[in-house]
Image (cartoon, rainbow, N blue to C red):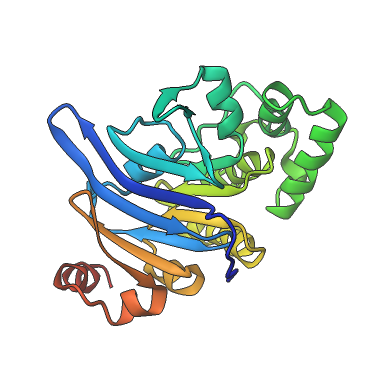
Length: 258
């Protein structure tokens, strides 16, 4: 996709994450270019979802640096030190990152349209009419224009996840994070969500996707990252990693899931 000498969309350097004595991420380094689609694969418990949450500052790291388009999320530099920003400052910085979770996390008491306009109006100060116009355009983009007045409980799982994607796009993010977005769906609903993600990839949205859908990774990813036990074991062009992996651990994993 996009080759650029610009500031990286995401830059991760020397990141460690611990939960007490449990070392979840070990010295993780990863650079994602603007417009690049990166699929993170690996066994459960390998640190993939934790890494996404650290990018969005939903989890604090114990060491290392994460920058999104050259900006720290949740921290600011004071001399040679990093100091945590206020919740309000962190929320403002985080608005450039959209995240879609395994569970849809929609507000059940709000309509689909109300779910979409909540963050643009409250966090970004977008005028209501502008927020509604953009929300309706995004619902049309994900094939749910006729569902704007429905409540989440009236939708299928696939429809709810498409709403969640549209909601994440409503804040005009520069980077989209997907944490196994199809894992909670019935098999026949997976395709409709992956189709929306393929459309985003075609439009050069920077995306980091934790997935077990190897076919999707093969079709859409520019780069595939294989993680195991909190480390990046192998990464490179999708075809190289998926078809001719260099590391024995990657080969064993792909033999089991293919």
